[in-house]
Length: 416
Image (spheres, rainbow, N blue to C red):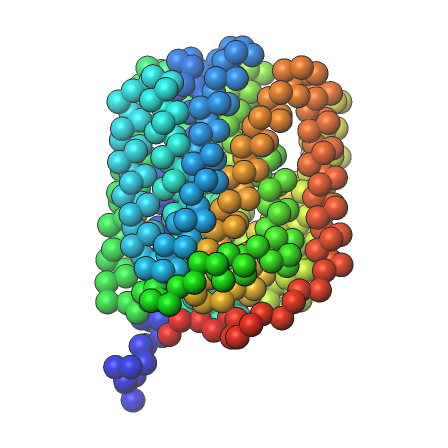
């Protein structure tokens, strides 16, 4: 018997998740593509960056996390009040236009302002996307669906980042504007495919009884913060690496082509591991997988410090590879745990805390790492890794000791 008009078919129910996965890949691909060349694009050369160049590039790059951090809660509240798709599609269209605009200028003040608005768009896209997945995924499969989302999110980043590195090595610096044109095209293409996929699909359209005070009260509960704050310290590390890895690699003689191939291979690995880890989180529990992921990040920073101090060592490289594999368990488990803790009417605002913490982490990480390296050299980087590791360990212990309060009402009923 065909489904009734009031009960959408399984394909119609799942189509919004497919649309989010497509949108997420294209958005993150465009962002990763342009971020790989951003430091070189700002200062006008791809090698030989001095301390003042690094400071300028870091300041302009930090504008995106500032924009995302300062507005993402507003974006989440709008997605809860008026619906997910208006916020998501507006963010995608705005980001595509901003990439095209960035291709027309190298003025540092202009690029800083454009990057600030990138942050506005990025926060709107992420908060609304995560809310759609939380709406559609049953609690028993939420880890797996969040793993698929995280796979597309990270694969888009890494794939764009890898191609950006390749273009950084292949294009003369005065033609790097083509990379921003490519980012605009990627977002425009993703927007078109998303519009096709969501046509006629049922979705959450907002609520007329939106109580912002109640929403914010649920968002800033201790149990929510203990899931999201570890992302703060994780992205202190990731944000620094994303902005300066390409120019640092060229500065020590590593081919950006080889680096691009290695990063692209890592992206392919993400597609396999993230849904798998999400499924393990559904089966064995969110806390266990988040603890494994946190241990992996600490191990990765320890191995990175040893490589920096003593050079290439096969045992340390092996330890780094194992640590990175373990670290990948954190994302899908934590996203599923966060969605488990949300009410439907406050889901986008709560998921916005994820975006808020990672953007703040990127901002703080850029400031802290550049300051420590400029003043203390390699020991400053060791100190940075050590502080990030200690913060992650303390937050993990606090989360394991926490007993979340019971949510009022029905917490995790998906939209139908």
